[in-house]
Length: 218
Image (cartoon, rainbow, N blue to C red; front, side):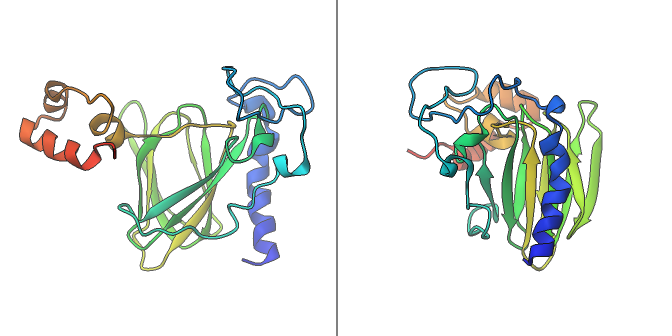
């Protein structure tokens, strides 16, 4: 991607970065508080480390496309506080998502953040579902933006014949991700079969078959 394209990406994402009053995280109380990820201290966030450098505010991981040779044909590369400790207390983060043709970022939620995506390449069908079970969908192309409200179930799928990629912005340093299917069928300990058979109106055999595909790897 050329320089102009990167400038466009940044310009589209700047509002979510600058609107700190909309941040889902608590306000910072000092200039910086670089996360001490090695600390055993448990806080709502991370404690500050004393010795910081410019590298604490730098992460090169979104520059290149990730491999998409996995079950869903899509890979999320996060740039949250765990990859970029300088984000601690700043209330923002990013991610890059790459999709093979047919690739899917399965239905999931971010409990701590609203998400805005900017299409780098390709074309995606995206959507979210409200608490009233109303589905909002749109096909988005290179240079276009779509917003997923905080906490709502949403997805993206590449129905095209070429790869696609987006840059995502979040108003939280650690938005969290919970995939619906993994949560229900791959939890540890597992959700009781009776709960799932009644919820999905299917038999125990079907539930067990789905669970076997989402079982945590040992």
